[in-house]
Amino acid sequence: MRVPLIAGNWKMFKTSDEALAFAGDLARRVADAESTEILLCPAFVYISPLVQALRGSGVKVGAQNVFWEDSGAFTGEVSAPMLKSVGARYALVGHSERRQYFHETDETVNRRLFAALKGGLVPIVCVGETLEEREAGKTAAVVETQLRQGLKGLDSNQALSLVVAYEPVWAIGTGRTATPELAQEVHRSIRTTLGNLFGPDASSQIRILYGGSVKGDNVDSLMAQPDIDGALVGGASLDAASFERIIRFKR
Ligand code: 13P
Image (cartoon, rainbow, N blue to C red; front, top):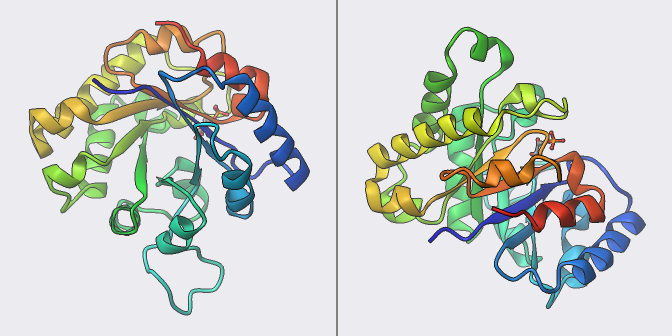
């Protein structure tokens, strides 16, 4: 069965002191939450200290992005081997904010995906439609294209180490969550696409997270849906109590 994954994406928030205080607090709060995998994706500069602070707690640390080359003259970039060497376990790939503000395309998503896998990181590939695309009835087509292009060249075996996150752009940071039924519909179609690409075995094992204004008061109904295997949480992951509530979702 698919182990639920609750991941916090801190985006560009928190100072060093705040990050470390949060880590201690969270580790105490979730010490007994063993049936759910917990992940924090802070800014690059906090990965190493958080890995140290969370050692033994069961809370994993990941990156918000990963560059596609292993090393070289690429000022400002961070590679998969670097992330692995400081203890990162996961990397977000193709978050909509990267697509929107930093020229991320399905092609660069694809390159980052392979770099993450080669470097031993679990890629969390993010997909999702804009409000305009949803209103034009294009959601399924947009998400399918993002998957087909972003995952191009991946084989069924590699697909087993993949996580997909569905984050409708219009639900991110807006307080406007997709209804559980609407999210489930897209998750179902994502699993169908994954089945077409990698076969039924792989597609039944790949976790698909929902992201976009996930909070303590909507996580239970989202997690009750059969194809929602976890959450990618922005704002509500910045506060240890609200993140704990999400980690303790009830199905
Ligand atoms: P919010 O939870 O703040 O809407 O952010 C979602 C997100 O983008 C997580 O990656």
